[in-house]
Image (cartoon, rainbow, N blue to C red):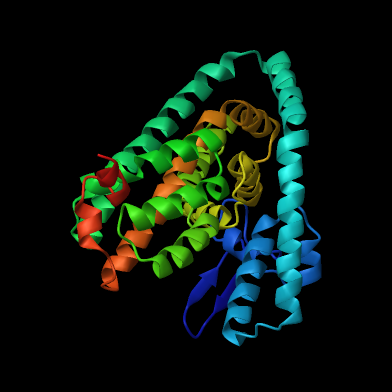
Length: 325
């Protein structure tokens, strides 16, 4: 023991190694800030380093506000390459890989996990539907004071189209047309908010990824603390911002969150494989949330700027339909 006579303090059983342990929730934050950038990026298991560096570089480039920046152009090119490569993986390679993972999982553990996965599927579907119908209605009513029933009726065709295509990018033209002609949002606001929202506003994706991560962690035997839940929510928010507007990409990006949280044992991988196999309908549903959320934000921005056409918003049908009648 070491004694400090001045303050009469006794320190017993202090380990010379020190440092954070795996039970320390702050270890997640500590690992996210690398001491060496090159070494941090070379570790595939430490996804939080890439997230931290990506946000830091983005903030710095935004502060520089240099449109001719070579670094900015290079990052944009890398982003395009990543999206094309990820689209190829999802469309060509993922079906074979998912089938192989499922067959291996069922061969080792049986089909009992499907019963547990059905709980995740039903819970996620109910959460997405409730947020789609009631959540956005409440947001429209609170933020703008407008009648949310008009919004939900007019945006329903966009939600159905997004559900069928499972692609925010494919739904953008119809969403733009509906937001301008039926909801009365000005063209300037629509042309700015909707394309940006298509890439950064992924409410449905974030909800799915949080619930999927909690399901996988629970099945794999990991402890879920309040701090872990907050970290999962933050990672889901950040990961959903970078999710490509392509079918099936949300479940692929989910692996980033699992790796960042350290949920990577054999059972976690098996549970992840099951989610990949049953997640397609949920991907279709969450796409509807994503595109409807973009339109809701456009309505809010247009209303706050005093540019919303209230007559068009409150009309039960658009001008073209009135002329036909």
